[in-house]
Length: 532
Ligand code: ADP
Ligand code: XUL
Image (tube, rainbow, N blue to C red):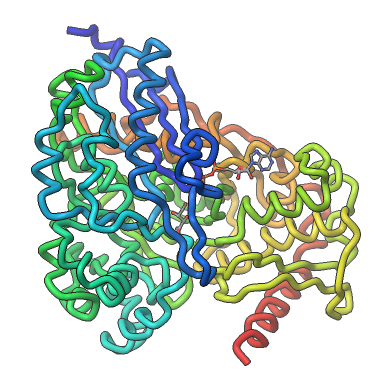
């Protein structure tokens, strides 16, 4: 048997553009990292940014077998790098939230009898009733959203039950669309998983249950009783409960790893699979978020989240069950136009270089001389409207900005939006408030400086931009001791603390206070105009 200190824990993240993994040892040091980029390493699936945008521009899916194949590849990469799988005591992971996977009748049997001589993607070739999984970027289910809200008695009523009003990307509405548009595939479906519980099913060699935290992103679960809401289920599709399993605590140990991984990669037979969760809940765990802090994740989507004790759901933002403490909750706001929009402006205004982009941020003045931009390339979630809108200091619409002004307008606009909407959910600067930044763009100090200036608080980062992976490796470790009543915070007590990256520039509050007000008004105006 491996010595105690040799043990390690794996955290996976099935995110939009890539599959990532991190291994931490017993002392919480990161000992291995790897990733598989979908577009470049699995080019046979022809995705862009990990997804297929359909001709209606609203439907967005990813090939489920691409995710399966990515797992084959990442484990092989780790093996080639000499990673000793026999050290892994437990693993967990996360997935992009809301996406859904439709297992075909008979798939459970296939999962239970995987031949270790073959790749997973060969074995599971015929196991899905729907090959193109709807993902969080999909906004094609407005009809289903209206139906759900009407059936339960309105948007606020639905939020009171499920933590959110109806959102197009939320899984229940996606399931309702599959039921309506592809009834045969729905009938053929034995089990519906989230991306997270689909991934844990692979490791478990059986259907894994949905965890409370990611289950909160479905518009189907009562976040207070932590059970499916019968009202929501019956408004969504028939025989749905049979296809969903039972929600479990996010800290639950689902069982030992499938013998497939023991034989093929050398995992110990008693390696535990801890419930997988959503990527944002996973990040909350990885960032060691405390009350009073605010986390800002700058990935494919940008998200803002807070730890809360006493949730009061409204029709803006979401309340999810907390992934590390079953008594607590988290509030989350998601912005669809995150990294992909920053990349577009980088390509158009900075010759495709982050360095040039950063230089422009440094040279344009804080507050951008009153110029404000709203860049919703794709239909935004918060607020639900699309289009690019530029305003000068008199709030008059202008057709274009210079390259430098455009770059600053984009980044300031994105952070002004985050602060305006976070304040509606209760964000207040109190002494000691920290902004914790993560995601790909958190490696860019000049972007973080704008974040700090707009939020009026110091910004901290953790060593890796992959806080979801790291958080899930920590959650795997917690899974070993959770039954003894040990709290998550105790398990990660010795983990590296987030590091101070930047502090607000002097005078930033005076510049941004009026801009916050103006941004809120302009965004409201853009939204109202789009409704006419
Ligand atoms: P995901 O949501 O897929 O997990 P990540 O958190 O890994 O995404 O973030 C990926 C994004 O990070 C890329 O799309 C890229 O735009 C962005 N990124 C990477 N490096 C930088 C940088 N130096 N400055 C700004 N953005 C960056
Ligand atoms: C959150 C959301 C996205 C996805 C993909 O509600 O839709 O952040 O989790 O990262």
